[in-house]
Figure: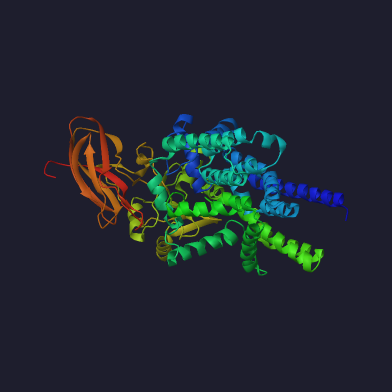
Length: 625
């Protein structure tokens, strides 16, 4: 076949695959699916903070690159606070990635066939498509990885002529948009060293690029990352994603096995487990590495295999977790090695069998490498709006308890979509006894919004007990969320001799700006306060709380009223009431302050000392009390 005809066919196929990739991303974006909990944590910060406020540590144990935060805030101010505006930045950048991946693979492998195959795999990859429309910076990580590799490797005349200043500017911007960009910048530095070795001289322009990156990296690190308040909690949350340092241990092998399945089959590359691909995929991956070594294509290995190794080492050092969302930017490199291995085998088949057999092999690989993505597309397994609609229609003014989707409900309430403002967050992983203590004030039917899978938020035992007691009057379920109408455990007599500050009061108090969907949790030694008006007199202050121990020692809480200490106590494993007394000298505001003074964590044992407040009661008392 004429070479021009082959080139024309390849160009048509490239355009067709590009169109398919654009369509799948646009379709996923326009679905308009609701936010989920992780996005809601972020969204509440954008809703409630100004540009300047976003430069400070975020609420709900969140953190993000500074320019990413400011850009998303700009989109919301222009287009309003909605799902499309929140997800616009990763969506727009996802479209940029499509031509980049093609040109990068073509440059690294010197093969148009491998580049076309890689473009196809990347265009339909479900992980990349899903995170192209999510309020998280993982999709941005992917785009910036490709931008930097493209600038470092392309032979385009303009870029080659101005490569140094383009790399310097783009690298500095990348570090402010993506925390993961450090890895690709490190790889580019290694690529520069390789070029120095091959040229037998040091490139002064490269030195200036590296110096500019170092200045911005250090400034960004010490201003926005170093000693970040959420660092300890995030490391605790991601303990499972830090690789064991001993590479010969059973724990390390178990970690690699888990990540291997996650990367190849479950959450990243979405390779089919059928048709023998459970063996074909890793085989071709290894072939790609070996073939690159044999061909001395070290640049290819620097931008595909080295980032995986660097991130793995960072996870061993507890710097950056090694888990699918945080390593999404590795997908282009992993796909490059996969298709390069397939290309190498296809060349062998064409040489010893026939070109047609080689073409069929490539098509077979494309089928197995993309089938799960097509089968599961579009990815949409979380959707809370039908549950919110059900609550709005039937329980607009009913006491509502929310488990997993607490911040999600809070976000949609602030947006005006949810209507029931009588809601309380309720802690994860509690026993039926603790649940009934939390809801013991309910005299009529109330509502529980929870995960459909009760193991997600630790409510399996609670729901089983509610069913056993026949306390579930009605249920509505949609995808991952369930709304349950619950009958009260027993009639509740009203006590008119005390004033109660309950969770609803605390929810509107700035000091109880809670994290990680655990409600009224005291994570640190920072004091929390709540105020109420009281007449002059003696009062009994009853704080219903519990805690999680570290080394067998539970949280120790100091309590003050109007800055005067009224006592302290250790919490216990279950909700118990601690009674303290104070005298209100004159009618007016009484400010109750609670402070934990022994906060601590042990990341190795996965223990964290935290306190949880359920209710605060203020009862009238006498001096005899």
